[in-house]
Image (cartoon, rainbow, N blue to C red):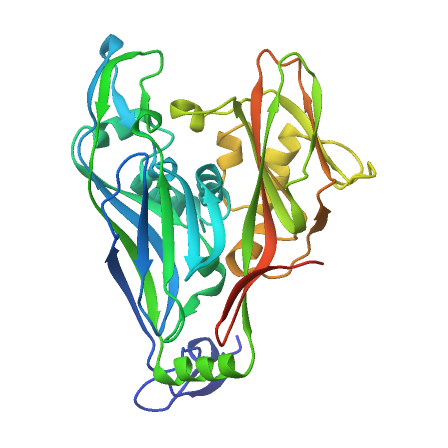
Length: 401
């Protein structure tokens, strides 16, 4: 058996001759750490609040919002049932991400939840840990136990730093998260089949951004700033575009014109739910879809020449594209990718192909029988985009094929 080749490695205080697989190192001076940054104000249900991140000469690698809450009280639930907070993914209806005064991205709560089920986990085990930290969506009883006393809940946020380990340097504007909280009335579930009397009572007692940073050595931060002074730099990410539709009862198929979606699309996630979903309906789905098609404005197939069936997409396509089983657990949730590897695209914004959308494309849905009631269809397109930064310049730019 041949040995690994040896090579010089100077990542320590003396030079070593090591196997090639041990020779990889970051430049000296990097320090990786986790820091909590307190929100500008304590959140309240139904209102906005802001988290400002002013750290400089660091790269932001990951971010979680840490909520501390009181017990959920005030409700009397029938049939010995219980009330439980929804998972923290749904506590904020929208998260707007700013660099200074420039809006970079808006993240709707359902899109954030689906991305954290489908695209960010490296494994089922890590997905379970994240879901437990947010409040386990698949178990009302687990969330009810957690909701019965003061506790801590974590909302993971995946934005451009996910793809870029984004550098926050001296002279750059601060990063801000502006967060619209849902109402408390829309933020809890009841045991299935139960009803409740009374008025829910809940308060937040604190809120932090838990940030995983890499402290940049002066050589790296100074070099990056020097580059930025000579030319703009670009950091690619996957921007979310949203379209929402209502499909009337009694139909067996429908054509949804995706006029709100333009640009170079890597993947599209869409879900079927009851109309105006709230409470438990935020995490339950309509399962009546038999197949779907994406068509160009000229009625050309964008999905290989024939409809994609429910099982083909959820079990075969998503089974090939994703390392998780969420689409097996949840009929009514679909992901279609024109990129070779949608998870790699979301992790790094690698240009692994896509489909150019012009706003004339159509999502055709075919149902197994006529709809018994109206449904809502939420469509989330992940599109290639970039942040452009230079001397006095911060802007978001769309990318095309």
